[in-house]
Image (tube, rainbow, N blue to C red; front, side, top):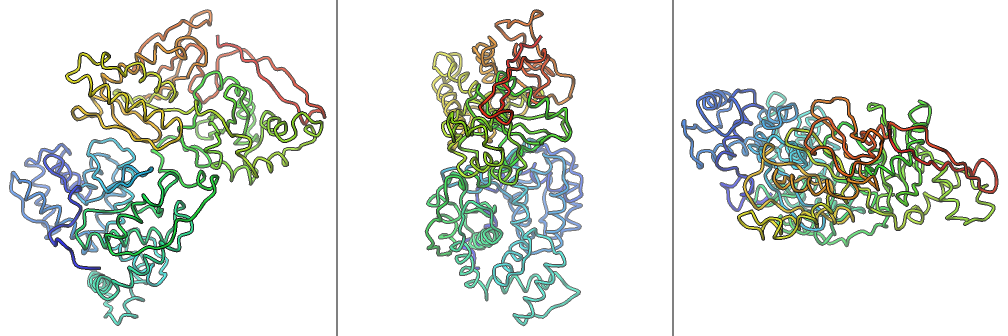
Amino acid sequence: MTGPTDPSKTRPTQLMPAGTEAEKALQGFLHIMGFNPGNVDGDFGGTSKTAYDQARTQYAFLPELSANPDQAAMTEVFRAIDRALQADTGFQQRYLQGVRSETNVTELQGALVAGGSWANRHLGDRISNAEAIRIDGDRGTLTTRATRNAATLTGIATMQSSLNLLSDAGLTPNGTLDTATLGAMQNYAQRKNIAWDANNIQENFRLIMESLQTTDNAALRTRVAEVLNADTDYRAPDARTLDAQIVMNGFARQQGLDIRTAPDGRQTDTRITPENSHTRTMIAPQTGVELSAPAPTTSPVEAVAAAEPEPEPSAFEPPFGLNATYRVTRADVLREVQSIADRQNANPDSAEHILAYSEESRGFLLISRNETEGRSMVYQISDRNVGQIMSGINDGSIAMDLSARKYIAVTVHGNQEETAAYGAEELRTAFAENATRFTSGTREGLLTTSARLTNGDTLTFGLDDLHDALGKIDSKRDWSGEADPVVMRDYIRELRDAAKDAREERYVNIPEYPGGELTAENSVELNIGGQTTRVPAEVWTRIAGSLETQRGFSTGRNASSLETVSVAPAPVSATTNPDGAGSGELRTSFTRQNTVFADDIVAENAADIDIAADEPAVEELELAGGPEATVRRTTAVAPT
């Protein structure tokens, strides 16, 4: 690797913390390294100073700090940490051990910032570079990505990926000096005539890294180019692509460049185009890697089936790679499939996943039993995400409800008599061969969004309803009491556009709040299209007030079910009139704990189905040909 253009620079400029963030970062770092600086609060007082001095007795490379260190002194500390994460094997091992085992989110975030770890916020259809995460105690997508990236920024990981590229060592670039890594190091040393000292792993590592950065510098660039040019599917994760990205980040580090690429094994994702690939068009040319291969082509179904962004941590994971935003919240749709889920949960031998067709939503629904939750979840299957369930269709792990079989049969054969003889396996084959024939034109109106309230509760509701609520508060007049109504109006309109883009499955660009700093105490975390943002509590209050006035919430017509998951779980109840009729308004605000609102609600979406209702009336419809073509049509009875 070539020499640095700025030897004093150990990380991109945008990743160097300043002010209280720097002090919080150092406090988090001390925590994971086994010292006690007190709270991660940005106040580097006596306790923090004592802990730092203790750390210096063990890690002599840390510079001395005064009782009131300035920015220059703090910067030197982080540069020392950066250098040790490249050169000191023992320090690298201890740091990663602390990152992997830390459960306190604030301490973890501080340690990640101190170590120079980063995340790439915007993939989608535009280039993005590494950015520092916030030390706010909120484990979001960026923190998850930064945790993943932490191991790849170490010198050991760079060495592991380099050995993979040069000699097919087959190592996992995890920053750990395991048996396989030590064996690959010894093999490399023998080939390069490097003296191997079994009692001095640190010296072995130093000599090998020196050889990789000098003797094998050109060979590594050639191998990186070969790997990326030979990649036949930019969207699919590939171990060799991951190695190439890690090594290129090493090139950038050695050259003092303000750039990194996401080490995720993908050159693009399901939306980003090759000409906007950060790996191909930004870091490769800047680090001297010459790429020439044209972008590979993939079919629409393959593109849809490509890996999705990492999900947020949750109590359950959607099946078949589906995104949680495909959960259905429409109460009338949930009532329609109530009988299917009831049968699914009543019989432990029934199919775990059932594909059904919904007349209410004019599309397919996947009903999946969650064993740990003891309830069913319902997901929308649109023409844009149908590829996510192809594996289950092909291997038979998704059963077909009569409603789905009837719809496919009628689509294939019309009302011809042979429809009745069209069996389940033939229907499965027809769906798998040309799935979008049966899903084309399906509505996206069932997608969901969620809000984490200031009291810690999480509220799930329809993305359509969020879009409509924002549309009711997007004028300058609505914000006349603010210091700058125009700025607030534009902010709300950008949020509304983000909700629309998420609903239509386009790249979502969520705006940043133009006012002051937002925290868990003064704002609500809103999830739009898998991305999270914070909106001020006063903005959420107006969104909530607008939601309450919408027809979907205030009348029972096509109402969304609002599922509230409390930080202190308690029995969930739905508010209704004694006579079961819709009241015309919500009974209380969205911030009340342990309550699910909407007059014709399906409690918890998911027991999907534990609705307090009489047994539904069932109308049996016969297709020509007998019981195989029977369809159950449920007429739902309003909850009592």
